[in-house]
Image (cartoon, rainbow, N blue to C red):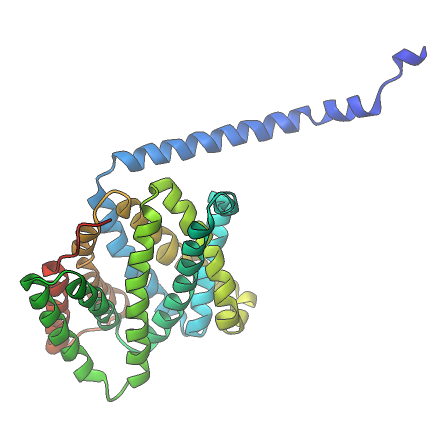
Length: 321
């Protein structure tokens, strides 16, 4: 055999990897096709469908979380929710690529949104550990309505604010003496929820796909912020397969599905329209609390939730996105 006929190790190694390269290239093409197909389907779906899905899952996931509190502390469940959602977004969106392409202002927006997500979820879980889900949900909307009334002074918003204040008074007057800490965290969560809506709309203004990429990046930032808050409480679940799987389920139903549908809705409707539709949330939270957690509200609590739902439906924001 002459020298020129000797096999070249590099060429042989290259040939050995040809089938593997073909496999991964084909898989990338399939994933890209699936992603484009999902995006096309999302564009065709009516915005109201996303709002309804969001309204259901915003509190269905947390209701499952309450059932998990017997195994894991609330802050630990909040960390499992955020961490599992972040892991899903990493696999799905690879958010660092879009994050690196943003300017300084865009990056700061996502950092702040991630901080809000981490602290909001943590305070929310401490609140629903101490108070019924429907009450916490109703309190969430008081700052939203107050901001609307301050930003757009109209008779509608004055009426809305009055209804909300009376409704929340009904809810807090019933239970405040027994659970002051629960209400403290519920009102903290309410302020953060208003920030979630404002920042979420700014992210969604770049379009549905970019908004989901932004959400994915913000969720990664939320894990960093939430880790010193809740990892210690989540530690027992790491050795408990049932609790760990339940935590992942909470992450999917509480953070992935509702937050993605929020972005899909926010990218296509005005903020005032979105605010009108979220009037469903206190009502759906009360229904979920009854069905999943057997949290039967009293007559005055039903009246309080009804007043808040009416307030959210009546109020109007500026027509900015």
